[in-house]
Image (cartoon, rainbow, N blue to C red):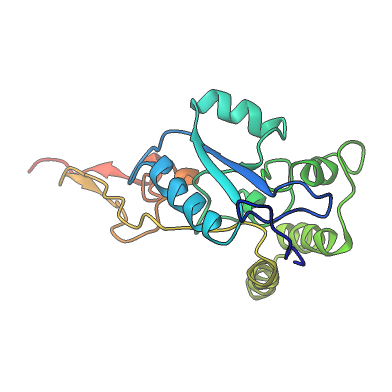
Length: 204
């Protein structure tokens, strides 16, 4: 990145001569390890390579307000894993993107508001718009791979860890509950089992 100049404390300097500083702001975790513990570790690792990083936990609604207003240095939160196509903001600049807030606003408004993104991000938007209307499942998969491959190369969003255990307790008279599906917040952490898909077994 060319950030090879440091101040007297060993922190890297930006091109304008100021210290490179970031605050990683998160909200209290909904599950698993406390988010603030995870992002404190991330901040520590960044400090070791010369970035003046600090982690901070704030209340959830305040975090959402500040993130939506593009007021956070590094919005730190739980991201989509399996069902990203439903809400692609982690991988594609959209209205819900927190890593590309002004670019996402531009895409969502058809260029009326926000900031016009560079060509490479416009390409991501174009691929996703094509994916949404493509009837051929193989072509949709190909487009999805293009988006993910590009993101893996550029790393717009830095992933830290994965909470893989999300048990769902189901009474044994409930029928048609999937046993091994992915679970995440787009499906309400309900293992992608919708209420209209299940029924109760009548007692004999």
